[in-house]
Length: 96
Image (cartoon, rainbow, N blue to C red):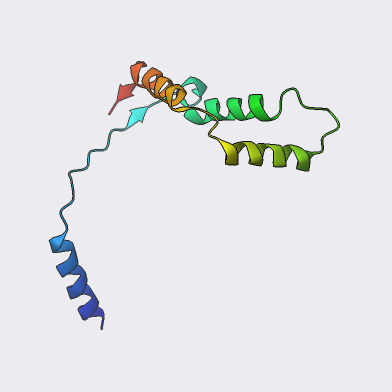
């Protein structure tokens, strides 16, 4: 049975036309928050979901507030994400 599976897999993969794939590795400093998109997303989640809220909210209520916010919309709009990616690409990063 294993040879049948291997033969079938070989037939299927011979029919696939895959585009060429190029990987580029960037060397970044060990701590580089300006080059980490997650840092910007976390900042927006904090700013929109946790700032200016009553102190009486419990951790669970704050978590629900963030879940609702993330379910409703992305922390960064398309223009902000394009600006962020453009900023990262303009940085002087050593590429391998």
